[in-house]
Amino acid sequence: MQNLSWRKHIFQTLSLAIPVCLSNVGHIAVDLADNYFIGQLPEKTYGQAAVSLAGALYIMILVLLIGVSYGLTPIVAEANAQNKKDKIISHLKHSFIQNISISILLFVLLIFTAPLLHQLDRPNEVTDLAVRFLNVVMLSMIPLSVFFTCKQFAEGMSDTKAAMFITIGANILNILLNWILVFGNWGFAPMGVMGACWATFIARCFMALAMFMYVFYAPRYKDYRAGFHFKNFSWQPIKEQLRIGIPSALMFVLEVASFSVPTLFIPGTSQLAAHRVSMGLAAMTYMISSGLGAAATIRVGHFLGLKNKIDLRRAGFSAMILALIFMFLAAVIFIVFRFKLTSFFNNDPEVLKYAAPLLFIAAAFQLFDGAQVTVQGALRGIKDTVVPGFIAFFAYWIIGLPASWYFCTVMNLGVQGVWFGFILGLAAASAGFLWRFNRLTAF
Image (tube, rainbow, N blue to C red; front, side, top):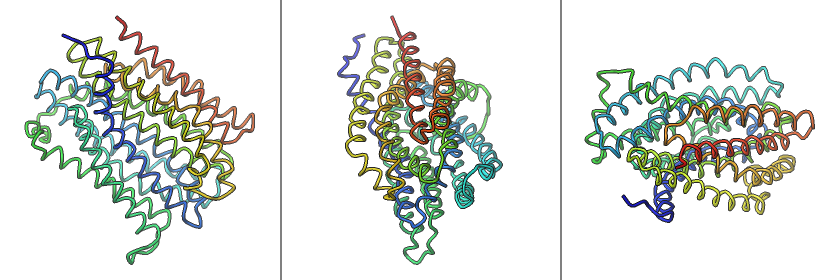
């Protein structure tokens, strides 16, 4: 069998990744749209600070669900390469059961943990609004479990465009609802920050319904409709998915928590709002690289099914090369346009004083961030998640998180110190993941 050239790998990775990248950007665009509309309100600074606090807690819970759902993709990709339809049907069915059940448990967890925000040393108007925001947005966990189940199934079948179009539609809906609910247009009462929250919830319900209908009714998936009949339950498919999904989820949590927990160290409402603005922009570029990581999972899983080690290795490294090129360009944009980008979301001079320099620091960690998320995706494609989990723990919690605390509080660098810690954590993670993938795929 003739192996694919590097050029062919780059092309195939891009063709798979671009729709996933746009879909991922769509998820962040919902957040950026909320951030923009909140930034137009008189109470914009404490509103963005409140959403930053709420997001720090919510995202750590949400990525557990997303990570567990990722267990489906490499299994479907490998089974599809081997034309094992019965296996795919079984895993789709059990993925629905698993992910919806987990989303309900996580929803209950958020109900009990949200009031803990009142214990933080923050102004009452910030924590009160953060808890109210959480009480609504946590409801979206359940519809998102349906969306991600269908999305990961479709991506495992190398179908990445449907989720892209649905996410774009959800973003258009979210922007319209923000305009209506935040400011009170078309006869609605103005809801301020809470209007942005309800807009997000409704848009996510739309995403779940649309993705479910697509997978159920699309002619290409008519042979897999048995996956929607929840009979003949078995623990075996769930165990197989969880063996991949749980370590993946823990890696996501370790990474996201290392970015979210330091939010609690950041002093002052203005610095917290600046963190919210700059982190939203950094998350946008991360989601592009995450799309390349998803493509790596699909393609590496495919070549694993074909037992083709040369192309498996090239599939992983081609995604990383593309991520590094993109992240370099993003770093240049962050440096050149740092004032324009941040002022678009909040033009308060006190906030901009902190937000614009943060994009300088973000430019520094872009390359590390792109490398770690794509190689992590490649490792997931070969179902290697346990050792990468230990690498993630060491990088983010032994190196990154303590460094953020030290720079922020001991060296009194504030929010910039937190972001210096991000650089160290991401550098360690990217080096560890790269070493692991290179070692496992060497021949």
